[in-house]
Image (cartoon, rainbow, N blue to C red; front, top):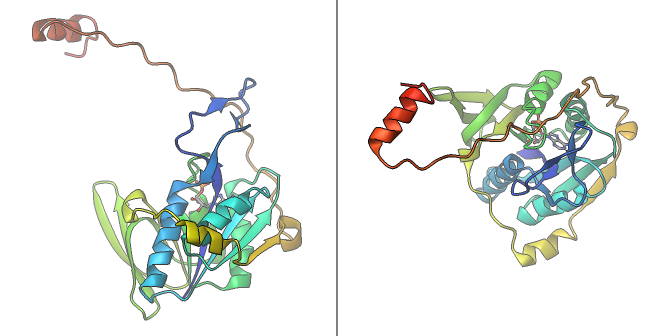
Length: 250
Ligand code: AMP
């Protein structure tokens, strides 16, 4: 079984982001960038399938600037076999990403495409669903368990409101990963060194002949409203009084 895993280079989840002064977006100058956490989970899952003999090849793909090569190398160090960078400095929205991933999928012919459930920079949660629709493939989203049955089907458990849903997907299919699927490994130093020698191909949206022109316009990006400072109360009676008379929630 061949896996294609989509990974995005995003602002590291530990970084406190700054909104640009003109409110057009996030200022990413000099910020630490890392692999989107849900995509790390997707890579980890693929590597575990390979280690268990359930997958033969893992191809990772990223769409972004030249620096996204670092993110691809991290995935190679975690255990992926090969990488493809669709290099562009342009803003690529989820529909454009899905169209590019479709083009890569048609060339690579994977059995399963794994993506994160969402990218933590734009929080769109659209790409996997759009990709499955464009390809006409079955999809399992928000996956917390996944098991290939060795006969061309994947059983997945989806985290849904108020419970879990178990589905059996025919391959080829699209899967998007949720937080509880696994805990990604750290790449070891020897594997980081080995990853430098693994193949990394570079293409472009133009070479793939895909129109990535944005369809959405960001009107405004704002910080969340600042929270009011809390106060210490001296007794339960004082707390109840404040809840009744100040907060008026009792
Ligand atoms: P989104 O729909 O933007 O929240 O992203 C969902 C998932 O799509 C991510 O977790 C990635 O797996 C994939 N994805 C989104 N943007 C890119 C990109 N530029 N390059 C590679 N994968 C991406």
